[in-house]
Amino acid sequence: GTRAAVNNGFKSYPTTVKTFENDTVLLPCYVEDLDNVQTRVRWWRDGILLADSGEPRHVSPERVRMYTNRSLEVSHVKRNDTGEYVCQASRPAPWGHATQVHEIEVMYPPSIRPVPESGKLEVNLGEEAVLACVSKGVPVPIISWMNQNGEIPTLHDGSHLRFHIDNPILAGRYTCVANNDVGEPATANIDLYVRYKPKIEVAETWIHAPPGIRVQLHCGVTAWPEAKVEWYFNNRSVKYSSRIVKHNSGRDHSLVIRNVRTTDYGFYLCRASNSIGITEAVVELSGIANPAVFKKISHGPSKSSYDFVWEVYSYSPIDQYEFRFRKIKNGVPGQWHTLYIPNGSDGYSYVHTYSFVLTGLEEATHYEAVVLSKNRYGWSKPSDIMRFATEGAPDENNYVTNAILEDKIIPGTAPESRRAVARSDMPALAASTGFERRLVGRGGTTKPPTGQGSATRTSSSTEGPHDGVRGQGTHEESQQPRWRMQDWAPHTREAISVARGSFLGVSSLGRRSTAPQESQVTVVSERDFDWFVREEMLADSVADSNPSVPIPVTTKIKVNSYIR
Image (cartoon, rainbow, N blue to C red; front, side):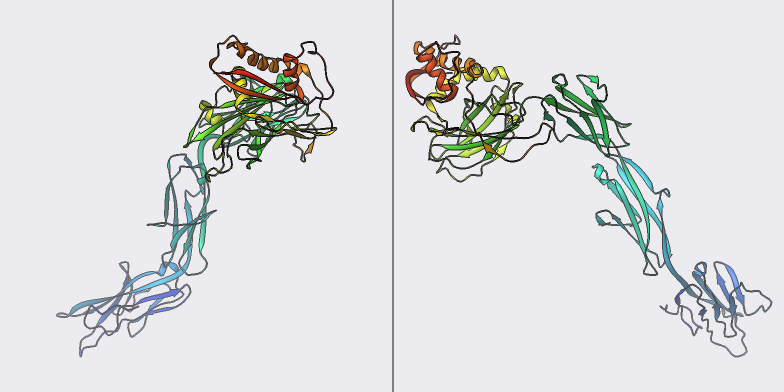
């Protein structure tokens, strides 16, 4: 480029010369000559005299010389030759002197270095991170930033990158890039480490395992500095042995228990600590069944019924289910109603599938349902709540939500509470809601009488090794389940006793019934429940018998229903 002349007497114009290393540059300084007046020309740079036409004995720096026309040549230019060069023309009084400024810009590719030079920066979570890079190059390089996600936009001075560390995921490698379109861009890396107390992710806070199998409790830990992880059981450090082994692989810290014993059941504490803090997480090892999972969401066979299918993982046989449902009216849930469903025999399996049709529901109505399972070790946690609707209800997305989060509206999650609900609710539920059961047995399908108050039930199981790996596939029971009076007698006797006691307006639990009402209780005589109906009503001498084939009989009992 050129500059406009600012001093009279010069034929040349101020010039900026952009060149590369090892080139030769010629800077002009043409002065108008006057008759009989001698003009003296000097060249200066940064206050240092480079050449003087009036002093032939002056020695110019290496690679610098002045021609007779007062032009200045700089040969084999280097980076440090970049700068301003001043041509000064002097005449005797009264003219004085004038100056003209030229500039040399030796262009070269960029270079860059990180700040700090170690390329490592540690910042606490919640603080501000300041990353910086210093670059050199002509023209002055433009600095940009990148990380693993791509280029990072900057608003102002690109040599600094500032941001708030609100998440450990901001840690990682940051790269500053210097570019001036001369040669290749230059880069420098800064590894950012975010200091924070350990974070723990537990995929399963509750693990079902029967005695004799191998189980592995997982504890995913992230932290900086690296955390130390220890396991505790019942508030004491775990004693590691050949049977109980601690295993680490990257961020996964696990506890392997071989040949599980019932004494291993309980709460295991995973504790991770570093210089910033301590974090703990709890994993429960239990023999109770996994929470049931509803597997089917569809309308029932009629406008007042609904077909349910759920699946439970349990290495121990499921003794019975607790099924609860409630009506949703104008978005407001009503009271829960409870049914206790004996399961019968599942054989040697760990995947239990149960199906039944709930009848006696209101048409075009929304409901919610939840189910719990019981095996020899106790009651499971509730399943997720499932919303369903009978045919004709307004379109509304069915959903599943966590039942534990709604513990306040699911009464009696403790075993004792569940028993109390069962005893007080059974007659009322039997009177208002049908429960039809269909059993696939050796001789085919035993169909109960149709009508109000029935539910359909089928069960299936998936065989699998006891190695903690869930198997696949489902098949229906292939043989008639055995009747085990001792399994179901206590619960069923209580239920029937409540029904019988309601004749007198007093339940067998010693509680006086309230708001008695006339209703029909329909009982289908299949399996244990119906057998105990006949046992209580018809004959007390068969309490210890094991009939091989149930006899379908319908017994209608008119009672005053016991309502809580």
